[in-house]
Length: 218
Image (cartoon, rainbow, N blue to C red; front, side, top):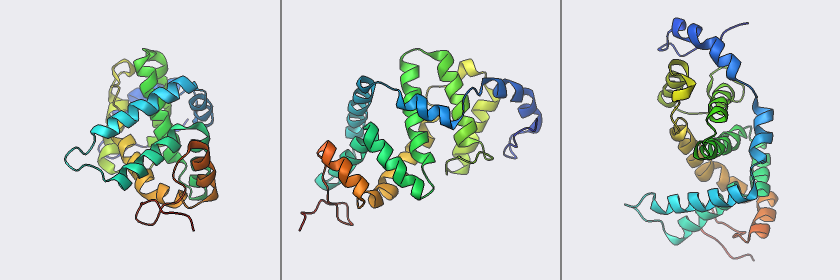
């Protein structure tokens, strides 16, 4: 069995010592993760949506959002927290070969639920599965994050015992992916039929201009 290569700053002996533990605990890959993520109850989804919206209300307090900016972000949050909306967005992202972003982001949301519910063993297993699927540089589904963030996660997973994994282990990476999807990918998605169908279902604005402002249909 070939070992996974690490960034050069992480020594091979450290990884070798921990590789068996990692491999034994990587219990499911991305296909199983998608199923597990989709199985979250509607109650949990609604709670997560309310929590995220509340958090967003406190973000960037030094630069309050304009009405159009707030409307844009609320539309984005409603899409990614709704199961049908998330599936439509994931389908669009797959055409751009970037659906790993929404899968990673939602898996990180699931991880927070596991932590709050005290499901420590499942939390640890999910951390390791997410690491293998989304962070490892040889993973075909790895997300595009900066070198320092990736290496920080590598160091935690490789050097820490799973029982000490912090609940915020993926927070920085998740925030980066969230911003990327909201500012970049979503700006193209809103002009698709897939978005318009979701927008109708969720009573969201159906027409956004290139500047992110809603426009009246002609």
